[in-house]
Image (cartoon, rainbow, N blue to C red):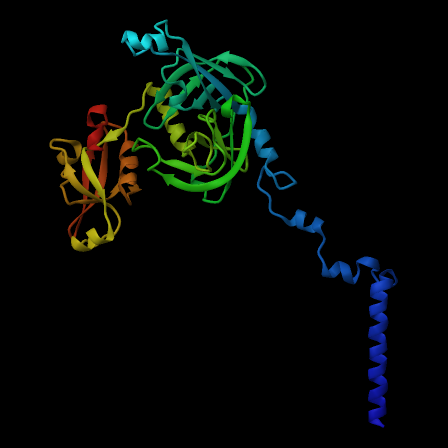
Length: 387
């Protein structure tokens, strides 16, 4: 009896599954919930993905950065710097046939800049306006005016200009400390004088100190396309805030190869503040020759620290020597700033106000010391001495 009952039950289940399959395939609207009942629960709709996708503060609904570009682009300007060309260096009459001996003609250098103050102050590169006799600025809205050079700093390749116009668009300054490798960035400028151009990329690396000619350059590396004419333009984050001033590219052809460099905006801001306040940039100096402390060096010297800067030389009667620093000491902290390598030491000391006192935390063998140093002022005559 029970076998017959089980056979009837199994046949009924088989028929029911078959009927359900046919309905799902041919008439899904006959089922409760209509066409979206079972099928809709199994496959999420594309609309839900777009709504749920996290977006940056200035990201557009399409996932791009149109809003960030709209916020930042009006404050980026094109710069034309007129420089007097040098006379023909070939004085031999045999060369005059080819080069001539007429008067020098002006040369025009092109670059970009960023308006960072409603009073009309602009940030750009030193090399864009270096030795310029006349500087013309064109805004994104078409207005043109002459600019005055407030000051420049070759060490960081930052210059500050001033224009006299009203109702200026101003770019907000971003927080470089929050920037991370992989963050999306936009480069805005006037490459090859084709007009304002926006390119997109990511932050490829931070703290690139070996990409420039100065010990005080510390770049943001990006793969956003930067080309000649972009110099002095803006590197902005996904919210449209300024995080860097585009300054250099690594290139074998003169065009972008995906390796560009920007001066961090906090460095540019510090330079601008000093130029506006003092008319020049003053940097601290203590007179030492440093070297990175490697694990091998720390072990061979039997040091209890593994990070810091080994002092290999101290300038006689310099600030460090007068403060008691000796060759063989390891500097681990300058003021409140930890020191991990030579780049950190250069940056920490350079940021100190000259003629003021600071402290150095030093490891001398097994002994930890705190030395008081009166900071000197770095001058060109002591650049080779480092600090």
